[in-house]
Image 1 (cartoon, helix red, strand yellow):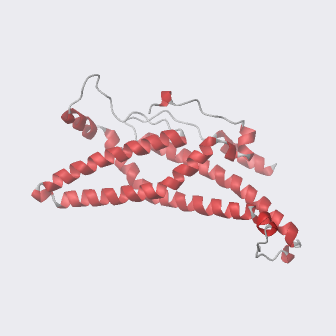
Image 2 (tube, helix red, strand yellow):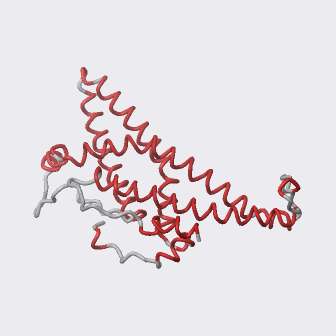
Image 3 (cartoon, one colour):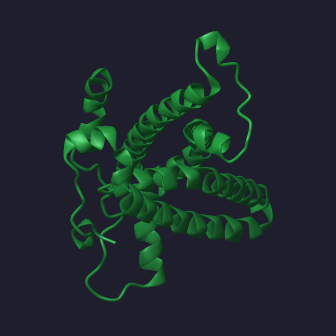
Amino acid sequence: MSESSLPPPFRLPPAVLAVAPFLDPRTWGAVAYLWLGFPLGLAWFVGMTVGFATGIALTIVWIGLGILAATLVAVWGAEGLERQLAILLLGARVPARRARPAGPESAGGWARSVLGGAALWKGIVFLALRFPLGLAGWVFSVVSLAVSFALLAAPWVRLLGGDVNLDFDGWGLSPEDGVWVLSIVGAVGLVVSLHLHRALGWLWARLAEQLLGAAAPQPTAPPAALASVPAASAA
């Protein structure tokens, strides 16, 4: 999918985005991208490790060359999937991976174009980074969202007969007031967490633009709302 074929991005006023990032579809695109990072990164890590290690080990009996070729084809497909995810979920402006010929292209011509271009080899670096960085991003997302939603739901848990096991007496609060304080803390934490998701999504988009295309794109400014978060929090 090319950048020109994408619909115009939905944009909120910066002041609204600073306090309500959950209204921006790009925020949930970043959340989805981080959640996909761990399973996809694990799949790419296992596939490339097994494919390249087996292929190199068996090159002495020639079958290894076929395994290496199949691995490179699979890697090219995985890079294409990652490229589309970065475009659709993060709004990345990833350049084309190779120049397409005007007429029909033979299998040999395609192979020379792919192997001779930079996109395949840069993409391998991206896939290798997807597992450790994707795991770290997934853990951050799960923990930050779980804690924020748990605190946010504290009053409703108590209203439904649940028990909030915290000592509010040391805070000078009754249990009824304490759960609402927890809910406010959870709401603030959720806003901060979603802005951090957006920041991580922006970083992944820039990495995808550098490593999943044949040429480097034009520099892209960071999300404007990120700069307004401290000001909004101070207010």
